[in-house]
Length: 65
Image (cartoon, rainbow, N blue to C red; front, side, top):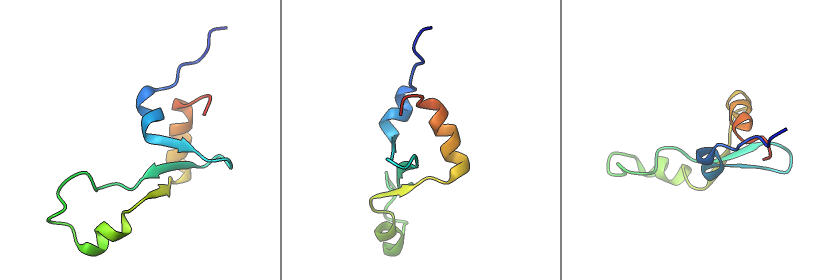
């Protein structure tokens, strides 16, 4: 059997933790910071854990993750 391919876009955007959860960067910080509040910018730092329904979809893209 041939190996399954990993989606290249998924491996650049997501990481799988040791417990199997999906880590992802906070959304909404690429551009347009003028219109965002300081509270939003502060809370959108770092990474977050993806919700379980969305994580199931991402895990299909990364069979060896």
